[in-house]
Length: 101
Image 1 (cartoon, one colour):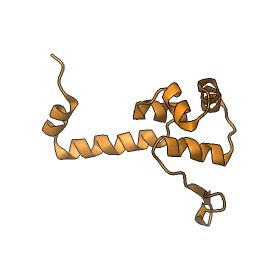
Image 2: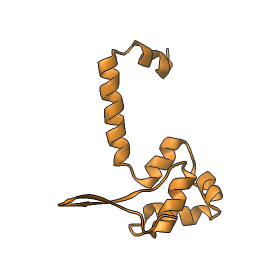
Image 3: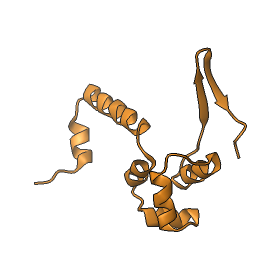
Image 4: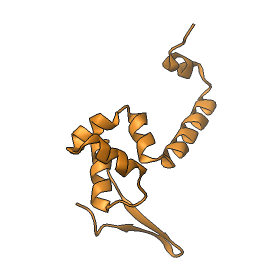
């Protein structure tokens, strides 16, 4: 018999639940754009419609290695998020605001 995840979550010890949530957060920090989209529950067609582009164009963006910052910002916003650029340098982290829009 399948159990509702929320029911299982309620019965989990708090320390174990905290570890699970921390690990999930770590894993999400390393996700590809396509994985983020899928985790949010959007198909390429639905996200492409939000972006006002064609689905094959989105597929190409998800597979490609290079992308303009503005394009990435639009995708992240369409997924419900905000994009921050941070340079991790030996002297410390620097937030880059030059490209905010």
